[in-house]
Image 1 (tube, rainbow, N blue to C red):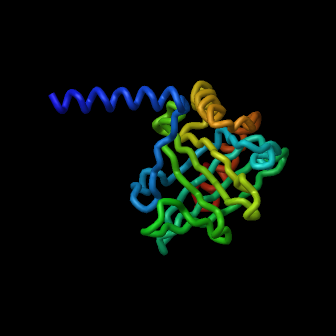
Image 2 (tube, helix red, strand yellow):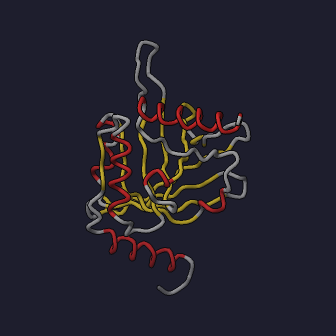
Length: 206
């Protein structure tokens, strides 16, 4: 009887919470406990959201982006971005440090920034991942973070459009109305050329 009453009250409180706050929340993947191995390899950027246009402005100059995540000998994570900007292919590296007492990643050179991993299930995409970058207010009088953006990455370049739609819709529920998705008009050509260059650099024919 007691268990039934508890179950009923728990269900009721859940329903009330959904009425008060109907927005869903993503599941955090703590960097200090998550299985890092399953997140190594290639990722394709699909979309970014924020409450401010300035937070996502840099993505609007790009046609497509894909990344590779590697674990280095000293235990850090090396993220290499391959960005197609107009007729140019730009490559950039970021190094992330993992600390046993922290659930976020520390970006080398940006200690004030928190870098959080969230489950792609929030966008109805179990094989996706959501990456959040957030920096606190610039001054004590500011009430809003100076940076707060969420980026959706997929293992596949041709992820279903409904995944991006779900991501944008759930973010909009949290008042993240500024968004960007990339045209990817040169994505296939760009990835093919980059792949061949990578093979040639390792002495293998494409």
